[in-house]
Amino acid sequence: MGQAKGDTKVLSTVVTSTRIIECISRYGEATANGVAKELNLCRSKAHRLLATLEELDFVEQNSQGKFILTFKLFEMGNTVPHRKNLIDTARPAMLRLSQGLGETVNNGVMYQDEVLYIDKVEAVNYLKLDKSIGSTDPLYNTSLGKVLLAFLEDSQRKQVLSRLSFTPTTPHTICDQDSFHKELEIVRERGVAFDRQELSLELNCVAAPVFDCQGRVSSAISVSGPADRFNENRLQAAVPELKKTVEEISSLLQQFSK
Image (cartoon, rainbow, N blue to C red; front, side, top):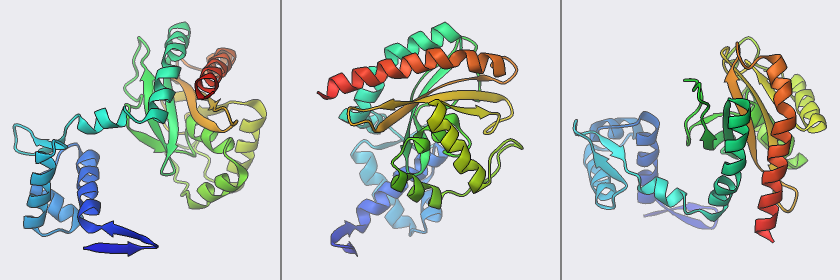
C-alpha cells in the first residue's frame, strides 16, 4: 500500500527495502534477524525483503551467512552523470596535487547535511584516519564542509545551518554558532578553509571550492595529512597549489557543461 506524502504516493515496501540497504551499509553486514530488530520489522517480512534484494543482486550472503551489499549499487552510482563528471574531471589534477605535496587529496560534496567523500588520492605515507570513498563527516569540523557551506547561496546556507547540531570531536572544534558564522565569512574572503585538528587531533586539512558554469559550488577539494607532518607552515604552503588545482578543475567542468 502507498503512504501519502504531499501529492506523492510512497510505497512502503520500497521505503523499507531502502532502509534495509542503509542498515547493511551502516554496519557493513547484518543478519535477517538483526535487520528485523533494527528496523522494527517482523522476521518474516525482513526475510522476504532480503530475499528479494538478493534476487535483484543488491545484497548477497557472506561465508558467515550475513548479508552484505554487492557492487551493484557502486556500479549504478558511477553512472550518475553529474557525479561521474565531478570525479573524472577532477582526478588528474588531484593526482598531480597529491604527488606534488606528498599528502592525501580528497574530493567531497554535500549530501544530507554532511560531507560525502566521492573520490580520493592517497599519499604514499597513507594515514589511517583518511576517509574512504562513500564515507561521510560533519560539515562544521572539516575543511571540506566549511567550504561547501561558505559558498552556498545565503538562503541555502541558513537552512542547512539551522539543522546542524554542533558536537565537539576535539577541543579545537568550533561549536558556537556565532563563531562558526564568522569562520565561514573568513572562508569566503580567503577562498580556502582550514581544519586544524577540529575533526581529529591527528589530522590537519585545507580545502577550496570547485565551481560549475553557473558559479555554484559543485564540490570541494582538500589536502589532508598528519598534524605532526602537515603542520601550519605546510598548510599555508599548500594553499597556492590547491587554489590552482580547483581553478583548473572548475574550468574543465565549465567547459564540459557548455
